[in-house]
Length: 329
Image 1 (cartoon, rainbow, N blue to C red):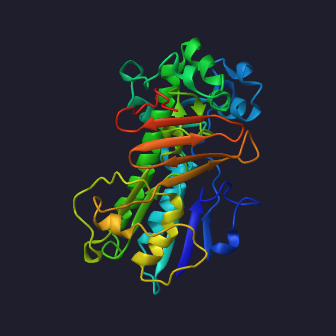
Image 2: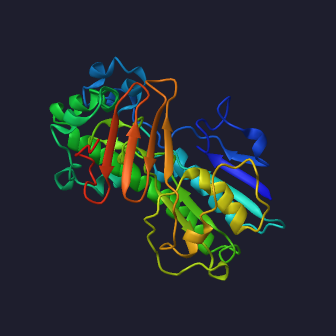
Image 3: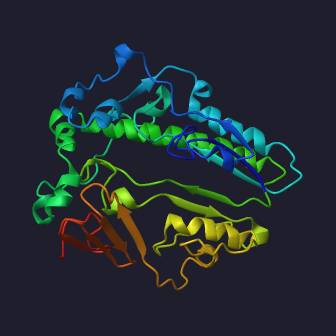
């Protein structure tokens, strides 16, 4: 296989947190999603001093529109590199990785994507003021106090708008790649997988990731098969819990390649073809063994269980309590 990749495929596009040797060619090393506004226009929310106890969050949590052309932004360039690759003929099978940075913080995006989400139309995510009353101490620490600053400052809607704008810009970048695939000679024999590395809270329980609740651990996952591989022209939803560890064995299975005995995941190809098929396996999630941990969660189709390394448990019935407000443990 020809391995061609660009953008945020690893924690960093290059350097010690990347794996350049895994690729035949790295076509983009962009490390941000959009060109930031001028320094004088950043952090206008006035909240940066309140985040001083978390320097990373203090640096990253910002949002706002930019006036740069869409095509000038790093994420679009990453997407365009993938689009150009798809327009060419290739004499061997390929694996194309396109890492879109957004909606990772900071939430900068061209003005048109903020215009898609007028502030007066923004709907705040569900939040329960006494949500943490039945949550163990470690869970409360993971919830953090920083989201309180955003809620109480009157900037919550602005933050959600920024996140939505970043989502929409990322969506446009993905659309650019898919449009290129549709027009390419590879459209009838290419598997497409769209996924994210984690979920995110924008005020439901916290601001950020680094937690074991549904909102922070559930990722986007869409798999498309060409018709000749049994793909369906209509979108189908699968409610079975799967793991990102399952992606590699799934692609091996779909491509007819031999299994790798080192893989811990399992092929979800049967679910791709039959989303209602039997699947007795839960998803297992681990968070930061070095920080308040080790902490684990087990997500079955019916229940979401959390166990904290320093003591304490949470248990939620997924269908009856989608916001995880009633800790049955």
